[in-house]
Length: 75
Image (cartoon, rainbow, N blue to C red):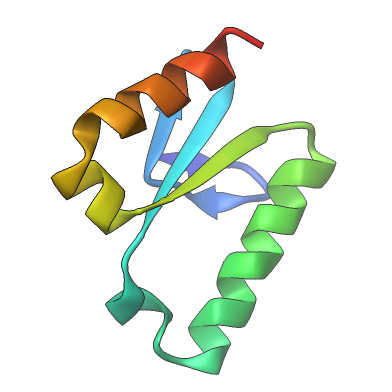
């Protein structure tokens, strides 16, 4: 999903919560890490709420992942 001024995000839930699922292999270079932080900062400045979770949480602890998303949406 593309968000103007932010770029591609992994998921947008209910039009208000960005979900970014981070895997180690995608942050193995400094440049990618810097770009990712810049996108995150732009999203925050624009008023988006963002959850950043590990791929391991989604794959191995989906109940924790779902609970976290629900808590964020209930704020």
